[in-house]
Image 1 (tube, one colour):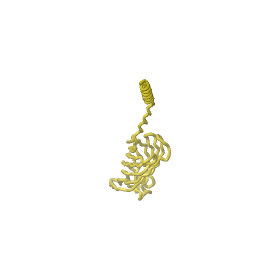
Image 2 (image 1 turned 120 degrees about the vertical axis):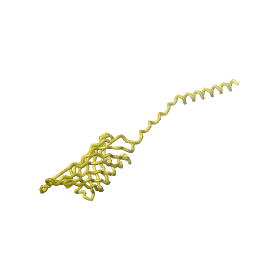
Image 3 (image 1 turned 90 degrees about the vertical axis):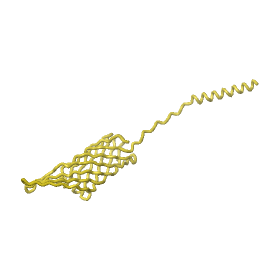
Image 4 (image 1 turned 60 degrees about the horizontal axis):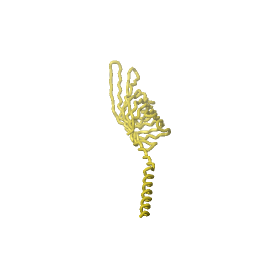
Length: 202
């Protein structure tokens, strides 16, 4: 009888010790939750386009804004799209006593890709190329003494924009070349410059 009681006591002690060891064992730390991935970004930029070559005979600098949306394909590549409006400043000249003035304004809708050349957040250098359509409004007027005439025309062209940019946190500095009409690139190109703001991703 006593032998059975001793064996039972020893067994109970062993079980109690095992339970104590289990209770005292350190609990593995839970892995921190990863930050949600933000694939989309909106951006907005005031823009100036300075006409080059023969385009400067038809219009002064264009000033306006572009709204953009980007989608991250990877750490280095993004799909991008931009749309907006640039109002051309009036330019003019005189010939044989006739004063002529004109301006060219345009609304682009462009899509393309952005590639990060170097750097890491928050400072990154990138190259971007886009193509699409531009709705172009051309207006002109002529006056000679008391005689005045004016007119305007709206047309749609296939154009493009290529640029290099620098992201500084949420700021986006970009410079490049805008071609309003690819079929007449030598007559419709402008130097493009913008300082924009990138909104938080979603």
